[in-house]
Image (tube, rainbow, N blue to C red; front, top):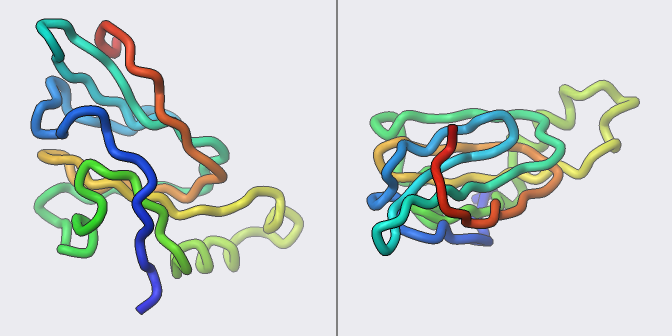
Length: 129
């Protein structure tokens, strides 16, 4: 079957320990957690986002959770990437790399993005405003 997943990054603490519900804010999936009596914020930032989709926890099938629970994965041979490529105007079609990223976070659900790249947001004390 196409759409195999390759794990590439694990969030710094289990999402069951998040003190704020994870959310996609602009180009970043933000989350907060508490460690050694201190609040921390972290996240995953994406560059060159072409498309996003989210599923509430109650709508996720096993495929959305397997290999992606608290783990960012890249979907290889993604039919969604193929669809987006076909839908993109020809002059823009090769302007960016397209990678299909997916992560499942407890109590929130599944985030999927087609983007050029990603990076972990450095953990720092504090909370998201």
